[in-house]
Length: 46
Image (cartoon, rainbow, N blue to C red; front, side, top):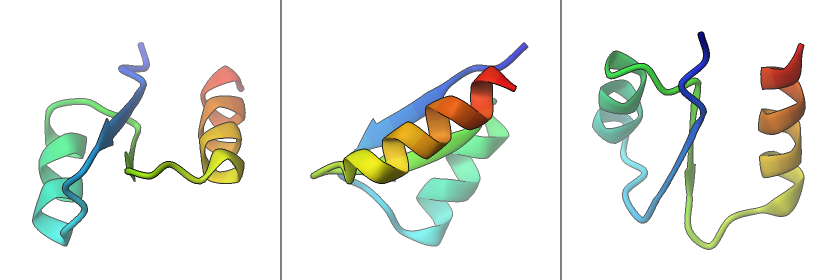
């Protein structure tokens, strides 16, 4: 089961790794790029 997309102000490689370790499918940083958000959500729906 997909955990979803994390949205955070922290975007270093360690932060991305940690988000994936705890089960998030993707990590987006603020301010969010809506094109990237749309891609992440569409990817989750497949």
